[in-house]
Length: 196
Image (cartoon, rainbow, N blue to C red; front, side, top):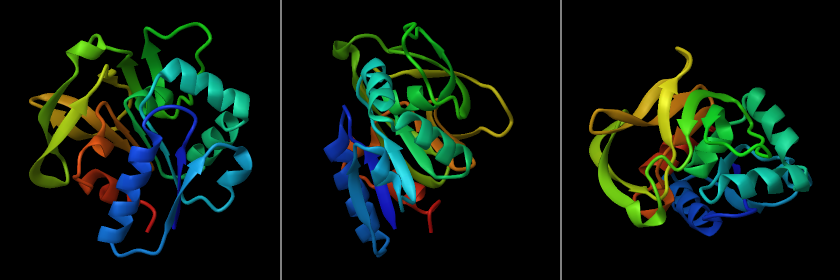
């Protein structure tokens, strides 16, 4: 198994470490790479788009040539997980987007950028998962908010109280929060099971 973490901006190393830990816990052979160039996509079984700043990630994915190949691969079924800004990159519709932003538009959700406010408004809270009874500590940092599920293909995956904060659509997972900023690898493990 080969997992690529889009490594242009954001919390890349944290996702790499969390994914490595998840691979170990699942006792799978595999590697995790820092994905910076399109040629690195060869042989990749899954991609993670980390949190960071969505305008920067969008611009750099286009500039490096990663944007179109990743979009096509995801449309063809490649498992992808986007967290925070990664969720924004995956979303079909984005409220508060800047004119120069371009999104992959592969996940049938409408999101609101920076819906939780400024950095100082960041918080941690227990999140309920669809696949596990034990709460997960969600780290929300200037997070986007999922404001609407746009098709029946999208299934809730995580809730903060009664509000959906994570979704799944076939090969795609989108999360408002940062699972990589905890020592809990359950979400990464769940994602990796899409590959095996």
